Length: 73
Image (cartoon, rainbow, N blue to C red; front, side, top):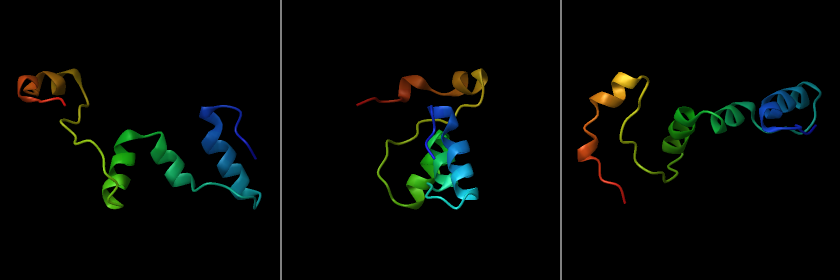
């Protein structure tokens, strides 16, 4: 079972699992498409990653961050 595009990856692996075929772990595929979940897994498995400056859910969250204090490499 092979997905025809990026958006079909989860569906293809779920179908492959249901058919008893080789498939990737569906939860890990979901994490690859969800940055917040991916970062949690990286932390859990001690995978190095850039530090998080802020987690923003709204425009107001962005306005509340002191961007002048953020140092970029």
